[in-house]
Image (cartoon, rainbow, N blue to C red; front, side, top):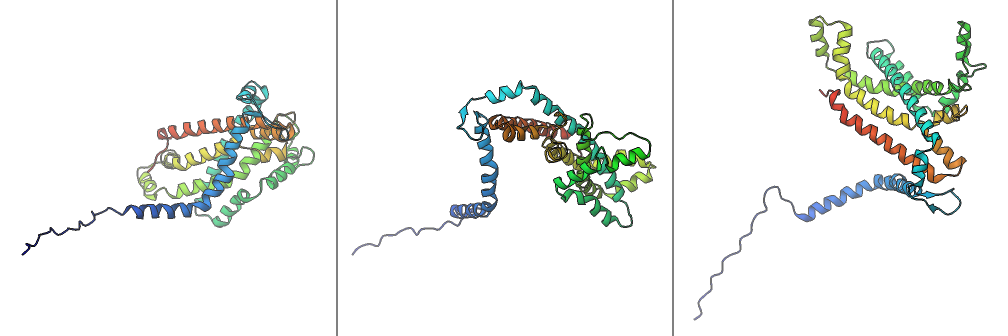
Length: 312
């Protein structure tokens, strides 16, 4: 008679709380990648591939027709010692220095006015935002007509009040200010919308407490509005600086970089190097120099924001 063997029953351990099967994680990752594909494919095809190609071209001498010739960092060294490079960067800096204060002050003034209880406020907001969605070519052509030295509306008004009208886009001293003026006018609506949203996010009880304490209008603006508006101001400054260093359309249409190169900017010089002079290698190198400058300025702004941006 055989004795039965006792076998220990197997115990099933319940899954620990919070743990998921590994296959579920891979499945979730697969779905995430699947839904990212429509955005990832254009990003790779139209941004990353051209960037890498541009970096490769910048290391060659190439006129868009003949085979490329390897020159290493020769294009970069040529650009850094070329007086034209310094000149176009100087013009771009002058443009940014004139454009940024003008567009911010104008946008802030509009935002402060249109934040009040005015009749037709929605219509005025839409009207001031209209130039933002208008083509740059159309805006530049309109401003070129307005600033026409011979029969433009602006010079006619100046002559009517006894002031001599300058040669806006024919005088080397006035060509760049004319571009700055038209650029600031077009972007006023964008800055206004950003700052208006920031103004409406400021709690009204802060102003009421300041009124109880006897603060004047200027003190409320300086001590409350500007500090609490600093996140919106920071965003406007970063975006405006990036756009300012990439200015091209309005310069190309209004002045073409002239007269005598007095309004030529970096992106315009990149265009000329590529399509006018057939120096695509140097143009690509200048593009990467401009990218490095914009990146450096943006990083400095982001690191310096802790000193003046106040997040409520």
